[in-house]
Image (cartoon, rainbow, N blue to C red; front, top):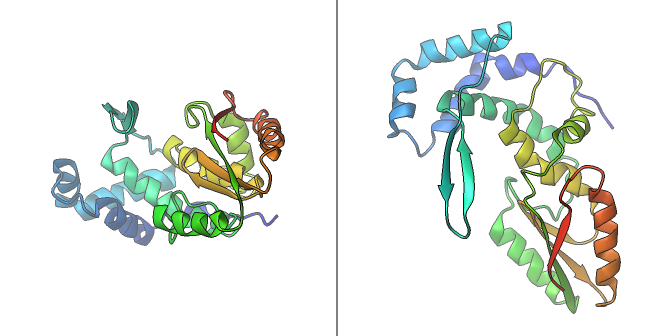
Amino acid sequence: MKTYKNIYPKICAYENLYESWRRAARGKRRSPEVAAFEYHLIDNLLQLEEELRDQTYRPGPYRHFYIYQPKRRRISAAPFRDRIVHHALVGQIEPIFEARFCRDSYACRRGKGTHAALDRCQGFARRYLYVLQCDLVQFFPSIDHAILRDILFRQIASERVRLPDPITHLRAADVELDKLRFYLRLSADLGYISLEQQRHAGQMIAEIGRMLGSWQKKGLKTIRS
């Protein structure tokens, strides 16, 4: 497994921060927070670059709220300034991990998404008679962050690179669940595994449970088989 070094200077580079601001502001330019940052854009980006290079950057407080569709969930939103840093980080590390992800992981990836997953699922439906639908209970809150960060930093050899929680969460399923090489689709914490015979369902659940037991606290919940 290749190890990547000297990533931090690329994250801090002004050009990278500018492109990250563009991505973070896309579709949100009318937001007061985004507009306020843009009003002094160059100064704000230069200040952010300086803080990152000097390692004095500190993330701001999150804004917490609830959504109720399709079920009640607590959302934690980072300040816009921090979202720029998130994009700056993702832009540098995403190609590293994207190269190792399996084909059938569809969440939070460019060129993937729901429609691509449905197309792939239809192809499998023509070949297999049974489907085991599983759910990792409260996947994001139950991740063991110490173990996950250790997994992520096996490829990123830079002590100055620190992954904020939103990035850790979004890449958790792709990085660690990538070990599940039997036909698995992921949409955040939801997976489908195509089976040749129904009796294999129990074996699959046991195998996934053993793999997850070392790093995910609440384990696997079977919805339907």
